[in-house]
Length: 137
Length: 413
Image 1 (cartoon, rainbow over the protein chains, first blue to last red):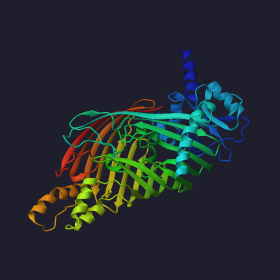
Image 2 (image 1 turned 90 degrees about the horizontal axis):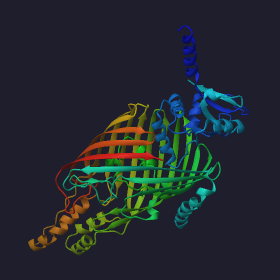
Image 3 (image 1 turned 120 degrees about the horizontal axis):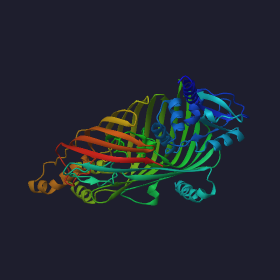
Image 4 (image 1 turned 180 degrees about the vertical axis):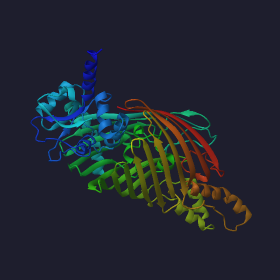
């Protein structure tokens, strides 16, 4: 038991530390984002970073744990509320929701190669081609 | 106006081949509702709004009042320009491709705060204006009929301009719009084609989490050459010895009738509690147009996937019911004119709304983008206040009450 306990603790810690992180290309000029800036970008209130640069936010796929956790910790809203919110805006013809990508690998590649994109991923998937703009606990 | 018609058609048709051409800039999405409704009154038929001529009576289940499917294509031409078209398929009294096109417009957005749109646009009268068909976005089965049932003008052909300011830690959005619209309404004998031209309005929305406040005002001129031919010729013939007949004719005319619609609304949503209330005043210059105050208050609580809600709503007329009396005339003439007198009285009171509604229901978000709803409503409807109901030809002069049960499934895709 004495040998297993640290292992269990380590695994628990590892799973807790898998935060959702908002990322951009390592080539991006922006260093970090506030929670409010991320809310504005993901809720369709702006398409620009605080420094004036236009960016496109990439969303995770509907029904995934990642998407549910991201919006819950960012806005306190359930996925159903987020979908209803976007239905109000998009069926009003005003703003279209961020495009969704299912594959983490694809998202990491898109972000690495295009400094005009931001996305969110599980922090376990981080690599040196992207940088973290905000970490959500 | 010709130009606008062409633009609407152009935006609509141009987007179909665009679909395969450019998948990246193109987005297809949609929504649908399947709703069953059962009303228990023997004579009064339930309807969602006054464009509908059929509805549940006497315990019958019906699916045509609220079931619909909507599809939308967004085509992003550039960072500033976008074309949007939305088609809604549902039961209508006047079915045509043109009527099914809910929106088809070009949008120019030079920055995040400003947009200008041209084409067929949603008519921004009230809180749910832009998404009243998208039942997934609200807790109830349908927009509250006491408030939304009387203004079934869904879109107009014209232009709007909106600008947003960041102010008091929230955002203030001003919109002005203008154009014209055509609507179809059922009448006793046929369908009434109503032209709304010009149609001018403005809305002001202030949003600051968790609040949203809204003010709007719209002014329109109505045009229709429709009239109940029998009643009209009767009144014209009688006017030689019954001077009031001319006044009645004028009151019943819809030619160049002016309507002024003002509304205020507030919404509070802190992710658990969802409170919403709206109040509107409709002023018209004739008895042929509604003249009323319409309102509702809704309270809902989100408890994980479950959202129970309560509703109170009402519509009350601005004027007491019309009573038509004949001048002193020989008894035979009075007797002969009696059907005309009665007919005039019914026609003059036909646009009156005088009712109070109570509702309770439950929404269940059982899967992502799928919601199941059940709702029970009870209405008390006063004599001569039945515009929102499908009524038998004879009209009615007693107070009535109706219970309505609705079940629906709403989806987004």
